[in-house]
Image (cartoon, rainbow, N blue to C red; front, side, top):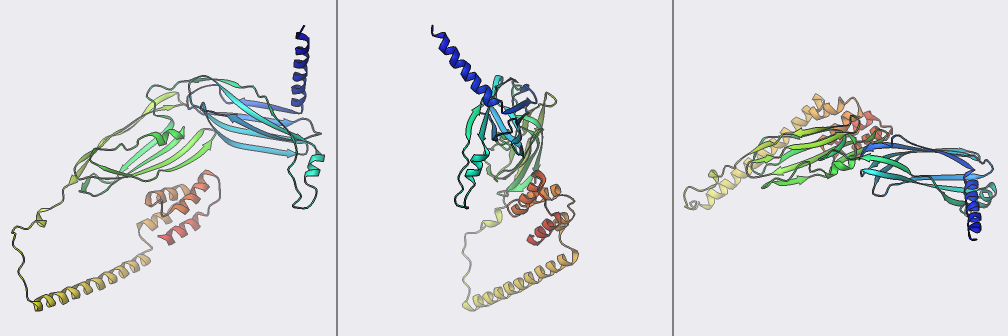
Length: 382
């Protein structure tokens, strides 16, 4: 007896959805549906307005939650009159294994020319928001088969690691500088979770803020990172080796990144000359002798100061005549933005931060940069 009304309600509900969706069409494409954890995939969504009597707007997004890393790569809009077209492109990394669903959210806003005319009629202070009929349209979820990574995997992608240790033999309390440079394409957030230089017992460790540049592409996240450390110790110590297990999602196989352990030798300070061989106080000298020694010391100091000033001026003059030091020559001979960027990062990232940022925007965001002008400014700063 009660089945009749329920069927009628269901029929009208389905009819309403069908009519609402008849004013647009869409296409959803996933580059892959079977992949490994932290393997990149591309999601493309196209939507076209088919009812040309309306004014329509769209907004499409992915529901990531804790299962996915999502970054929108691009949004292209063709604002044809009553014929709107949009394309969304997303970079997606699944973060857990198993059969999981990728869900979506599509917001459709419908209006007409009368509403637009009402909204924008009047003076500059009488404009009001466009009133539209908004609705979240259902987009079927996509099921993915996500395979687990090999046990012990530290990084996912294709990466290169270079560790540079300035010296192997130092004096007591002399700082040892270590640079670790990472570059490649893969799941970048893991880079900051790795202890690139573990703490060593009896050694004071100082770390600069990492310099990390990321570029999001259809191949994945391209990353260049620089970690800088300084170590201070009083006795010999061993820098631990670096062993990382990396899974290449393109080749579907694992490989290792290895840096050997390095022994650092510390030469003790020479303290014998600081200890008196006899515990006798120095003899008391006459005031005349002390005054003579004072003026002699003052004369020696003045001569040394004048000599230092003259030497500095001579060196500056020679540098100007010779065209600058080795660092200036390296800056002048940089043939492209990438070479100059690496030079500035290695020299002093804080001092040359404004020019580093301009070069990074040119390399990774496609902005124009006058390399000749940047070189000129850097050399002036130097």
